[in-house]
Image (tube, rainbow, N blue to C red; front, top):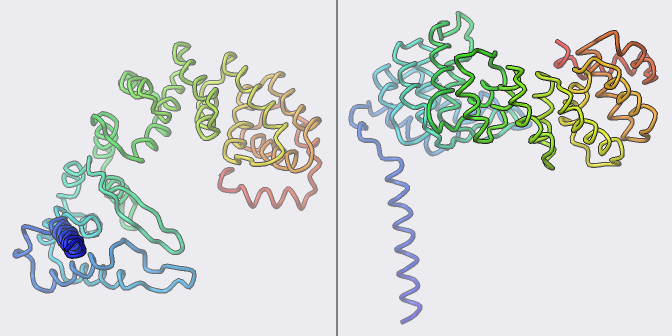
Length: 345
């Protein structure tokens, strides 16, 4: 009797799961789609992720790319507009992509309507698989320059930036990227400070561009954090606003790192030396010389590389002669220039 009860419970859970899955993919406007489009949508859902034209180490064409191509050939603009309301994020994103590529005038309004859609969607391009949110996918799709022209007008871009910045409780990677690249504008300061008070690290990077003494504590809180990825954000802020109070924290970070014999956080080290050279004074030069004179082994190897990169990216006469002290050969410098060309452009 007990076995029968357990079996009934398992069957009930399976039925509930299937019912929930069906509910998640139900689409009220299905009958407004052609049978061909309905079949393509089913195939997109079954594959379950967004892909490029080639995936995996072999670079083979996935079935999903054929499904997407079929959607492009067969779905009308009206069907694509309907599909941007589909509960399945893969279908929704593919439909939006096609509307943008067709320069459909409704695309920007659809983006605004979905700005708070944080549903996760899986993507696979080449060997790189990742997860993103529907709102981030939409933003990147509409912001991407196409061969004929960029989709968004300058006015649209300003509107989108304002929406991303001022929409309450918006969760978006694009929001953080916007904060890190945004130029200081007085009309944005209060909002950025509000986000900084909520411990948004990207907002602290943004607020550092205003060079206000009252905001230095934000920077120092990041520099004092034990998480090196958070320290990295503090160092990015220092590059925008080198100040004496933060330099004390940089000395402490530098001292720990040149005595570190392994487990390097390379992106943090890169920002450390770029933060140091932003000061352009004798004290910062002395820190560079301290690295060269007191570190050894792999520590000296990696730190020297990031000193070289910092000085190539942000040269200043106060640091004349430092690169020579690194004792790189011509071949080694050529290798560094090739490796870090993306940083030096």
